[in-house]
Length: 476
Ligand code: ARG
Image (cartoon, rainbow, N blue to C red; front, side, top):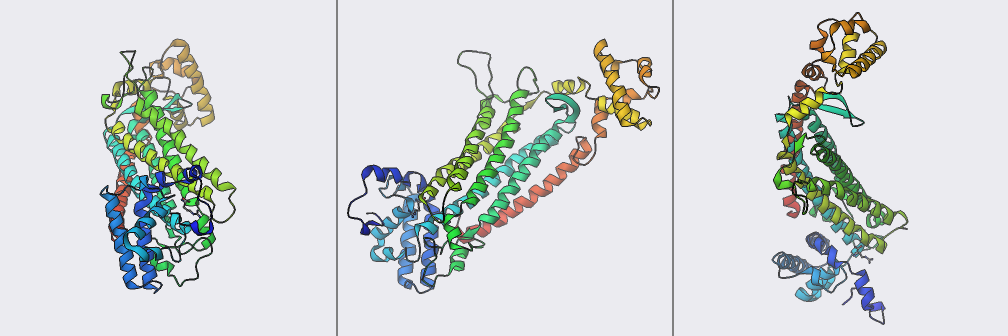
């Protein structure tokens, strides 16, 4: 039975019903839908719009449906209704009779679906943030062990200046920390209840929107009923936050892939997280990292798809909005899977310390330090840059590194060069001197790690308290 059959003289065509059916994918909102309906029923009862008995009947009917679905007795995906909202309502009427028909008083599927979707996204956001914390601590653990591991830092993929592997890993921690913050910010904006907005223009019943919002654990209510039912910017924002997470993971994966090539040989991924070739017996392929890089495209696609769905929609609800769900569901599943897969990729990674150290010493990565040496002896930096450029050219001609050029030859370029230059341009010394806050020196890395530990501790405490509070509210 359709929720809206009264005005029609003919049944919806079978192919049209299949065409508009969202139950196969929005069935996953059953928990949020039931939660939303329970809050709505309680509010109706509290306001005297339905009786206390009716409220109790509705709430226990809805809880039974929840149990039936969770225990596998009832499968929403197999329902004949057009969406999860119709499915649950139909089951409720079947179960409790006439009282069930009162649930939809002062409500529309438009504010209902908007509520379900926000509740769902709130939970997904928490889940994803927990996963980000796990990845950040896996990176920190690796960083802790690689404070003295020197590697080349690159610009233009050309060896530039030496850094530490720890410093490189901490760069990703910072990106992920911002990603975490972006999810928090986005959550703050989406944490408002659309319930009570009705189809578009609110309701004539004396509803208590604040009460329903509180029951559901929202921090407040949407301020405008038209906006409440047609807004999906929180979902677009969520998809953008997810896209940036993927962009960060993808850059890291690209590095892991490059570094595991024979050309680099900086790292080797664990056998448990690599694959072989069906024809080339020697191959060890970084499939997991490649898939994470590849799935980035998929998540970007969902963001562009939602923005495009929204761009031409007149207010308020339009059926186009139903297309928001698959995009968001798939993006959330994909990103959670990728973030989780990164954790063992990072913690099982084998690092070739010798190769990294060797590479850091090649290609004149200490040339800037040699220029700095002259600056400390009173040569203006621009002149020092020119002098060291000529020294490098000489070294290239003589196939030497800076440490191998004799002092007499250095003197040809500047009288300021003295025997202590060799100590000064030693690669480890070059790294150790870069102890500016946020720099690669072991000291600076220690400080960065300390700050990260603080941050992580605070988030974990906040998450623990937050999930206790929300469990009291809506048992998730
Ligand atoms: N399945 C619909 C969606 O996801 C629910 C809202 C239906 N509202 C309507 N007026 N047809 O958007």
